[in-house]
Length: 397
Image (cartoon, rainbow, N blue to C red; front, side, top):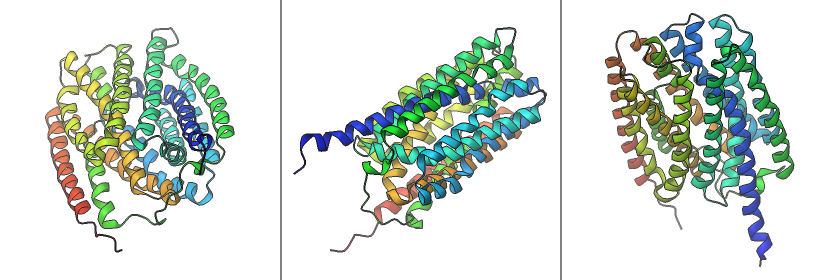
């Protein structure tokens, strides 16, 4: 019979690695979300249009999610989780180089390069977190990591907001983001030394096969449609600046506020997921519908409320999605499962962001109509998913 040390040590180490990777993500989000909080206004100053901002945001997210099919498969085949995470975070260095750009085309290339880095690291990192979260509660473990991640998403925009007020402006803000990258690699080294083999946390007794298509397709369809109707912050921030509704230094502050809400929602949704499971997904379309109605209005207070709700959506989406996917897959295929579903997630967001960017040039009403249609379809896909789950054949014996 196992003694107290044998049963408690795995849980203690699991929480330790969740916290370490949470700090790593915190530092990474200072960099990536610091940049993303001003992407729309910055591209506008370089001559980009609303359609360009929507396209760059959508293409960046599509690349950042779509490539995860390959990187997830590679992480499962090699089990070199830490090495892959190192490489992915290394591409964050593209962000400080934004300080040297003078055209929107070069800025767009650097922004997309950073998203490629996220595509490389995310499946391996999320696999480590999902394994470590097994002893502490899947939703809770993922929620804690996401909350720490979002704290970085608060700090980064605050740094950019302060730097915009200096003579160096946007360029000084991007340059200073090199410092968190150095700290990030220190904590990565600590994490790798603490738990060199993350597989110790969970030994799956499921067959290492891709989930049945008839059960997986409705789930993927739901996420695709839900994300197609989720507005991107670069387009929201473009609206703030283009309409002269929010001053430049205030835009990243509003983003930081949205990320603060996201932090709390990540914890709450992780706790909730452990109790109601996939029913938590139902909240996503309901939140998404409210965002464009408020965020693309011409009243600053409503825009701020809409952006805060957008932040709540970020905290909810990724926490519930990552927890529910881990519960559906064996450990041997978890990296590629994350890769596949992130690709679906990213394609939906890419297409939705691109369409909304084009529709913005027509009217905000068209954006609202588009979102309502896609989210109603997402609710239909959710009903399909629940119906398929009820039809799951009973196991013999």
